[in-house]
Image 1: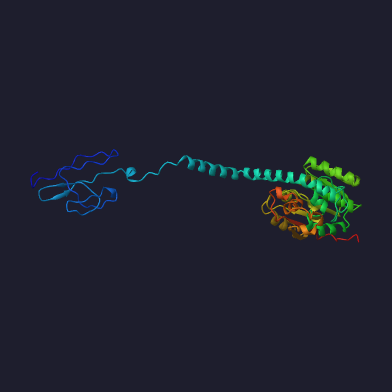
Image 2: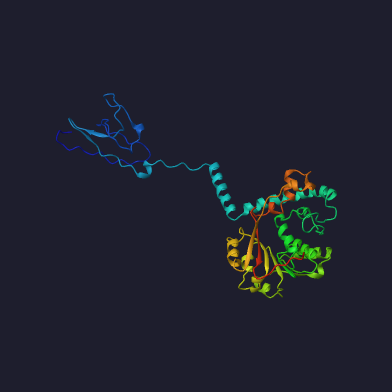
Length: 359
């Protein structure tokens, strides 16, 4: 090549996964280029390592750098390796778990396991408790002591069921009510118990579960109070408003979050002048306690009662059981349900009524 002749560019190179060949008349020089791999470093003729290699074109006295080879951006980056089979299984398991948790299937499965465990434990403990303590299915303490209550409901037999309300129930028994409306009566623990303790009171019991309602009716027969009790299925505000309201009426309500819609003083004006004992379910109806408080503050005085943990030492009848068995006996079925441990009740007394005690 002549001295004044312009250097000729090498022919274009196509990158196909292999390194391009160096032109014959090139030497190695230093040029900082982050796209070039540091592994391509070699020694110059002087013996010094000068940096990543780029091809250069040599003339007699001038060394001119050749045009840099263009590298596609996708080839310049390091592509992530495809996940292994084990990693794919882990990712699938995580996605499945999120799906199950979203639709509470996992919670229901856990509930089934706990229910099964509780059922086996109940069968194991039932024989010992039957022989030593509960010989005739009668409640042995509390405001309803002596009431016959069938089944394997040790919590009610011990008098530990909703023990926080024993003082309120005693106050109700000593008040001259003439009618009690129990919405959500279940098996009749309160309906039958209050009818048994208040001989002059008529009780109207509602429950949407027909099996529970039949059990309530059977308990009324066993305790001899069926003549003063009426039974009905589902209750809504319209049906509640159509009842024959007595001025001395008490409403018991345990309807799993439906209380906000049911206890509407606009649809049922008679609620303004009667007393109410309501189990509030904020975990089923968000903000239920605030709505009921705002709705009844002007017409009622409101006493709030919160749930507390039971102490097994208060019940010597179960002293021989293990700690877990004692917990099951005193659990009130909450150990196998989605109800949290901070249940609360509102005892609301109408300001328009003068509450007279029977004694």
